[in-house]
Image 1: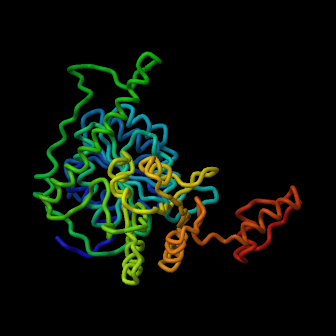
Image 2 (image 1 turned 180 degrees about the horizontal axis):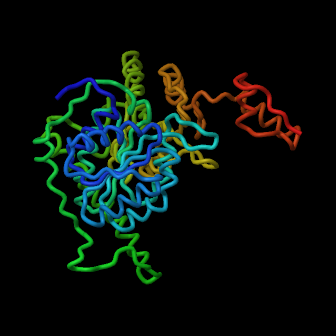
Image 3 (image 1 turned 90 degrees about the horizontal axis):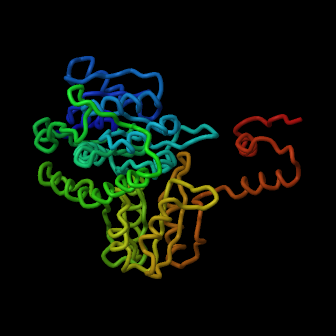
Length: 418
């Protein structure tokens, strides 16, 4: 059913249609509206049988999800930013134990300094945790990916993060097609866990594993993600047959048939990139787009196939590997090893910095002329950066960086330093 609704509410309704039996979460913006809506449904008796468990922290939320999943319950949680970092120990435990938990990550920057706006630094910090990570471009795709995520998690008995851009998607009101319960039931069978704690057949999970088996355990987590590279497209194909929408999969190209320059990105920024590419195409530029939906597992073969015929690519990413540059770009470069393709990294939108069509057009045109540096920072205020660097050269007692920058921009009063 088509309805005008907030992204968070649409996701909550999709989760409810998946019939979770345990929901646990701790509120942190911008994911709070999702679990608030689910809590209201449970309280009103609209989602049964389901237990909504209030917890005291994000670490507790993931710990509860681990316990409920191990006991055989379809389990769901959600978080963002510092909340994800707080639960990291348990995040690794969930994947190490092979538990099919689904978690929404409403992507938000990681501090310090504190920042509540969107970038991808939170989920990308967990790229090696063993969780599969799917990125939504739109709220419709966020709805669809959550339904597919439960199938994926439960087929492989491994956890899945569905990542959607905080505020940009979670708080946006737009038309979304919410499926019926009958459609979801036909696509997502009742939970049949591969492993379950049963008092009648007692076993232990999470036991100490020494050098004699730890490497094999980790490899098997890797092997399951390699299996997911085959399973994710299958699930997307089944979803299209059932729901009539082409949603999910590993990657998706746009206007790439004769592109000499390809722009690679994940998440909601793909919409702005596509609009920019449309304008540039009308002016004769041979430019296309590669959107990555599955970041983990990373689809090396599909990325290579999408880029092999272009002359250059630009990876535009909302993340920064401090001291290195791009995070997603590193994986993309691995995919095209040996092709001789020229690749550029453009770090953009950190902490919610707007990514405008005008700025994208400029950087794409520079890429076409091969005038970009290997690593670039979209709309970075170099005057402010250089002023701070000079301040640090002039005095050892230069003060806190963030407050100095805000003072230089006239946002806060000057700090006093002894």
